[in-house]
Length: 247
Length: 127
Image 1 (tube, rainbow over the protein chains, first blue to last red):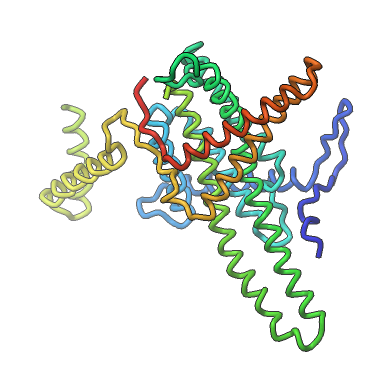
Image 2: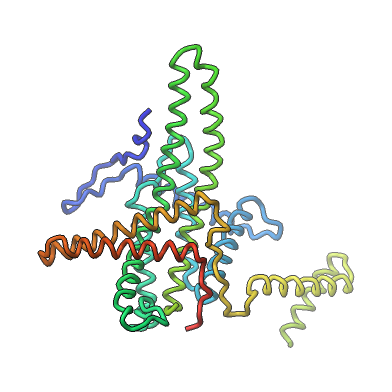
C-alpha cells in the first residue's frame, strides 16, 4: 500500500569495490533487461529486410525514421553524425519508461541518478563537440548579439546559469514525470483495495478508482512516449547549439 | 552510364524471367524515381543543409505539460543558482552574500528561460 515502496533500490548481489557500493541491484537488472530488449528488437527487426515489413521490422524502421527525422529537423544534416548517440538515448529512455509501466517491474527513469547521468552525458558531449569544433568561439553561446556593453556582464552571467540549468531541467523533467505518474497509479490502486476492505457499502464505488486507473494507465503510456521524445528533442536542440553556436 | 545500363539490363532480365514485359518495367522504374524524389523533398524541405525550427512551443504540447515545463524550469533555475552561490560562499568564506546574489540571478535566469518557452523558438542563424 506504500506508494513510495516501488522506487526502493534493493541490492541483489552486494559488491563493494574500493569502498564503493557497486552492488547488482534491481535497477541494474532492469537496465540490462532494457538494453537486451532494445537490442533484440533492433537485431531481429533489421535482420529480415523484406520489402513488406513484418511487425518487428516495422517497429525498428519506424523508430529509426522517427529519430532520424527529429535529428534532421532540429540539428540539421550535420547533426546526423550524432544519430547513434541520440538513437541510443531515445530507445533506452523509451524502453525504460514503457517497461516501468508493467506490473511488478521497476521503473528506472524514476531514479534521478539515472536521468541526471544521462543528461550530464548529453551536456558533456555538447561541450566537447562545441569546444573541439569552434574552440573559444563556443563561448559565443553565452554572448547574445545586440546587447549594450554595460548590460553585457549581467547577461553573460544569466546565460551561463541558464546553460548550467540545462542538465538539471532535462533530468528533473523526465524523473518527476515518471515519479508522479507511478505514485498516482499506485495511490489509485490503493483506493480500490481500501474501498473493498471498508465494508459492503463502499463496494459500489470501489470500481471507480479502478476505472480511473485504466484511464491513467493510458495517459501514462502517452507520457512515457512523450517524455522520451522531449528528452531526445532537447538533446538535439542542445547539440545544435554546439554545432552552430552564437544564436 | 555503363553502370546504369548494366543495372537496367539486369532488371529487365529478372522481370522477363518473371513473365513481365519491358513496358511495365520502365513504368515501375519511373514511379520509383518519382517516389524517391518525393521522399528526398519531404526529408529536406529547406535544401540539403536547411534547418527547420523545432516545434517545441506551447501549441504542440498539452497545457498541463507546458505548465510542468515552466515549473521545472523555474524550480531548477533557483536550485542551481542557490547551489552555485552556496559553494562560492563556502569557498570564499563570504557569509551569505553570494548565496543571495546567485539566488536572485537564478530566478532571473529561470524567468528568462520561461520567457523563451513562451516566446517560442527563434529561427537559428547560420554561423
